[in-house]
Amino acid sequence: MKPRPDLVDAESPKALEVFQLTTEPDASGAHLYMEAQIFTMDSKRFLLHRSATAHGGNRRDPGHRYYVCDLEDGGSLAPIIEELGGVALSVSPDGRFVYYFIDETSPGNGRLILRRVNIDGADRRTVLVVDGPLPGTAFRPSRLYPISTISSDGRRLAISAFLGDGHAEGSPFGLLVIDLERAAVRLVLHGPTWCNMHSQYCRSTDAGASRDVLIQENHGCVVDALGSIKTLTAGEGADIHVIRDDGTNLRNMPWGRDGNEFCQGHQCWRGRTDWAITSTSTRAPRGAFLIEGRAAPHAGHVGLKTPGGIRNDLTRDLKEARFSHFAGDGAGRRFISDAGPFDKGGRIFAAEFGEAGQGALRDWKYLLNPRSTCKKESHIHPFLSPDGSMGFFDSDESGILHAYMVRGF
Picture 1 (spheres, helix red, strand yellow):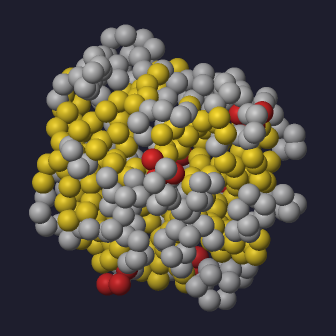
Picture 2 (cartoon, rainbow, N blue to C red; picture 1 turned 180 degrees about the vertical axis):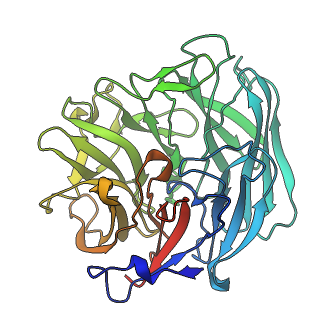
């Protein structure tokens, strides 16, 4: 880890320490997207992504690989995935294994391989190979989403993929759920508006809630026959749902789609609860707010107008709200977010949660200006270690996108 005291400014907490975790001049070293399950629960190790943008990167690049970052060993980096096409890693909840995919697909062709390796790099094995249509369907998966999600009991893994054959326009995307004990895959949801699903398992250990997956539906998206997204969303924008991982019990999150409030496209569960948080942008008043909510029965794509929807504005006590990407700790107590002005490098703040569903975020602390260009390829994407003691973010302040860590806040 390279100390970066120059990134601490006069407004930062006095005890704040900033470290640059990656320094290679010939490769961008971005941490994984903050929705990914990449940390061991003891907060000692996590996965770093080499030769990648903040949203994934070119998985065919020979320099594209993943490392285990050992924070107890001064941030040392040990390669964990070096196979060409490796993508969509998840650390098992007990911290023993890393699951990942080798994507050798193209629309309508190829094969998808799920592998598992011990987090120390030992005992690499193949769990599942998908080299034909998904069971009970005519669909073959391709263009795998760069993030997978694993259930809190470590028994199931979910990921989304394109399902088109490379020729038909308006082809669907779908949610695949893999039973890791049986090495079996099932398509539980599909349609043309699921192009950017952001699937995330609820981290509750409750038997019912642990089967729930948070998913995003991009209404108005336009995708070509090869699955490339031309228009991400249109009209009243995306809405967010929860679905049981067997494909039943689709529900609404009470956010957006009223012509004034729009989901920005980032959301996450609050710790191990069944509450989730999204970032919204509104036309009146103009701002970018953080809204907590719980799922309600599906009643059409009506967003915040969902009957029985419960909402809690976490930013209601602030004079100005310009938030974008964020994450919480494992217990649902601490919070971190980036915020505008993004044309001036952005800002990173930490806060504390109040009572779920009622309290606003409180005890806000400005941490630093990461000096990022804040382009899509270099989004700041802050997140916390599971114990909430450390924060992580991206920045291209050096001219190359690198991963950073902060502590002492």
